[in-house]
Length: 543
Image (cartoon, rainbow, N blue to C red):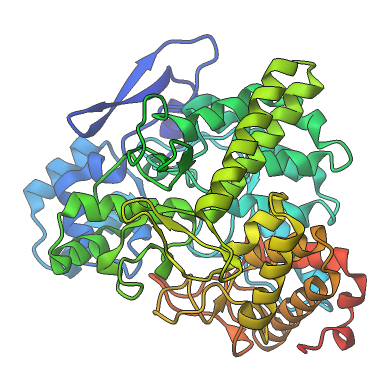
């Protein structure tokens, strides 16, 4: 991008996106504080060229092209494409290289440091990105402050990842970085009405697990209600996004992210406002739709909804628990999402109380209590002794055990009897050599066995500590840190997921294993701070 074209986007009218016939249109209006232009997604900008590039698999990773920056206006590039009509994959690759700036290669590889903590501290600056006005026609979304990316193919920052990253930033003395990220998420809520999955235009149709209130709590651990009160309008706006469509919903109906349960109580599901193939996984989605025999739009929305969950993909969302073609995410009322929304309702109640708005505080406390009763009714299985997801179409629990069963403990909505039962099933069925396994099913999907993920270890440790199971919490932390350390000693890397059954890097999913890695760094650093004796390798045995 030339200096001239970069300066050309520095100040523009503030824009919003409107749906017109299923497409996105950029609508601009001059404001006192102009913001960078929001462009349509790469698929909408480049139409036939986009489809050719993605379906021909010009790049091994479908995310490469959607993160590329065009060297000219889309109309100009499309005219060149029609004129040249590159017929072979090689010719198409040459055309793309001439007309686009491809993403820079990952630069987070560093020599192994003396200790795991020192290595993590070395990675933070390499994962930090400055606030920039995105180049013209880029898919990148503007945010006003520097931020931390996960690493690898993930060149932007992500919603729920960032909370777990912040857990490590703060004990590493980087509170300013954590505050910057909260400011960026606040900006996203103000600008779009919700926090998108990640800071790309192609992520705007969906959010991710709502952890903004938890981020605010990290800024003032001694008095989180102070931060909730300061950001109360934004918390309420995000809550309104998740509850949109609830008014007038009848039992057994669903609309957007809300579902009316048989007794009329409203719970939530993952959903997406788009029902097209994901830009970043276009070829995989199209091929899956062709093979599935299902209505493509329905399949695409369910794939996108699973991406909103952060668990993309898992047997939790699969109709037959095995094959991705049976995905029905929007049928599922998930225990983790509803636990987090209970926490958000409690946080809003606390923020309102801090502002002495007692009517508001009572209202949101009542909403939280009502959600808790519904979770106990529909998502708690007293016979099996754990929380499950619920299929609102069949009116049955799924009976699948996953690490999401620990979320009610994490947010504090369980009673002592429930917590004891969950602790027992965690110890007997989820705890493995290297930490908590994600589910008990092996499907080849990355959010299933044998993989374990840093966020779920933190949720488990904190939830069990909250309900006075410190021994089991420590055992999980010790095994996880031991696995992270062992893989680091052999590879010099921290990776996004681990095979906790075999104490090695994880696998499965849509793309190769990524290293960097934001939330692994954050959770590992937080656990090493919580349990200082784990800082010494001799204390980190796996048993």
